[in-house]
Length: 470
Image (cartoon, rainbow, N blue to C red; front, side, top):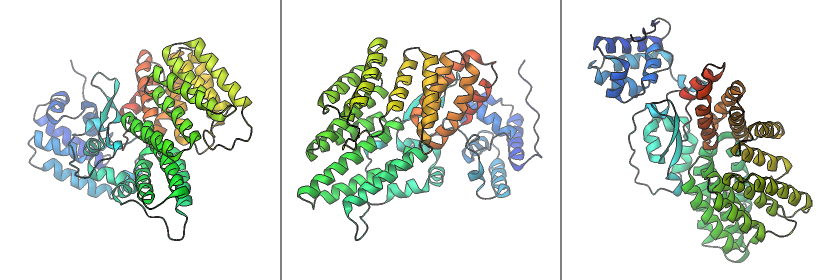
């Protein structure tokens, strides 16, 4: 016998009244949630929450109900009354821990875009809960994702991003040195990336690159060389941003662009840094051979006593972990520490300034988790989190997510779920694929402990949270 439907409370709020009418029409037509979900192509769990009033029904869902149940526009009218009752701006008051429907619950309709697309319009990794309850990752183009979210919703969620993407390449303010302008802008964009997420920053960075290319046409000599260096730096930044959102194809494109322009600029240290970053990207793409080989090339190219040698050694160590070579990985991390301790205490190079002992150790923790040393990995992430500066919001989310996975691997499910919820909130805010991929793994690991306190809370939050990267 099927489970008895929960009693509704239509007088609790306009949202509950709308849900009750949706269920009444479904019951009148003699359809179960499962049967209706196949007709409207929405997730039945989301439909149930909407009917109970636990979650606001979207316009698309109500419209689908109205058509499938032959309601003659009655439900659509009720939805408009519901919107009038709750008033404008209500969506903005929804807390990030209780957001709207996941993109997998929405109709996916492609939006035609005749404008030329940049590399970052390629696949963006988006977490989706499959019918069997697993979190899987699908790759959507930016156009598809906008279609899934609804163009109006996407624009209202991030108007500054939409405006930035539609504007022409920016001009340099009158009376300001263009080199200094682009350098200052890059620093601001880096800060905004960590606070608000890469999706907010990518369109702006692409416009800056276009502006730099335009300026190069009229410059010669030292100015042209500096612009090439700036273009390299912006391309590397775009490579990092697209890497963070899980768009590896675009990231490879931008890193290749950065490598080419670094050679044209004649800046050997910058080329060295780009090589090291390509090793890091290969590690994120789970390509151990590429990670090790490129890191070795970068370390061999680095000047003796330079910070870049230690950066390359750190990424090589993770490449060994991806291969399952525990001893080689440990030796490589120790070598990275030795290089860091012996480097010039006041290096002139601006590259890899974030490398310190704590950074090497958090990378080691990531490798230890891959190698099955979960408790040591969890301790490493906890130490790294305590040392993070306040502004490193997205990085904190990445470390929390990885710490949660490590605790799950160590069998400490309740601790894993608690920390996973903290990471989830940051993932929602920043749209980082690095966070969402770790949480997808955590979600699967916690299936072994569904009766443990906190695990159900994490599962429900993971199911409802909008980890949409747009």
